[in-house]
Image 1 (cartoon, helix red, strand yellow):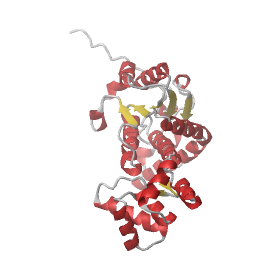
Image 2 (image 1 turned 30 degrees about the vertical axis):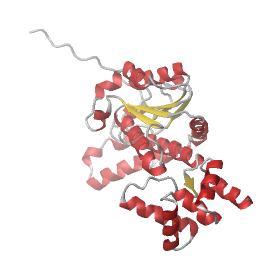
Image 3 (image 1 turned 90 degrees about the vertical axis):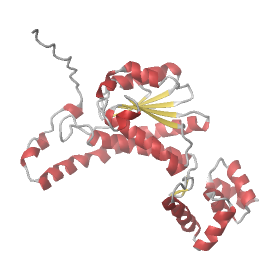
Image 4 (image 1 turned 135 degrees about the vertical axis):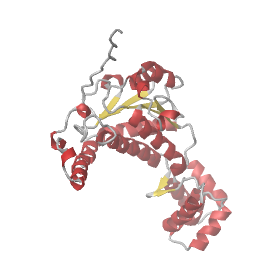
Length: 307
């Protein structure tokens, strides 16, 4: 029998693949010390993300501009990065009342890869390019890869650039190989993982913080909040219906009964009810003010006060 040919090894040079000198004895210490070591590494993540906030602000502003102009946002990632992307995109729908398809997450290997790893899909730039086939010049494309080199993400970014989209790379490698493939690189310097190469740890946390901040800041700018309250949430269950009423009472300071009455009069439209109560206007007047203000509650209230 001829010897088996070993699979081709692709040695990745990235901070996340290095051994962490602080955790070399992590398998020889008590459980509470294991947890302390993991927690100590986790504390590095917010600082690494904070260093990127000025650059992230540029991405948010461009994203808001393109969404207002009719564009969409696409996330592309493989493995853990793809799962982080899918989670963020999915949660925008009930949280901010976003229509499905406005922020779209693509994961290498397709939906099945959410629960059953399809690790080989990460190596396919063609797969990334195929998934990015409907990207247009109006869109924002965010590629997520801990190492900063995933071929699937490379293919997506290349296709997006060819289409004329605004491209962003989010990684845990300040010197990511794919940085030149994107207009903006957000490379969080989280250092070696507690378990070498386990990017579901600090790298994933950094990507989640960056993506959550990007999408949340964009939603705030687009008027999906009033103060720090969600005013476009989709009340699809009992808990959320209760939250709608709570938001209305907290925002107005009025009794729950009065808020419930106005909410019923506006067919459950939280924003409309809010403008009715705070601006002391009728539902039709509130709707007209919100339309003129592109859904911004503060601007609608200001306009109502002037009339």
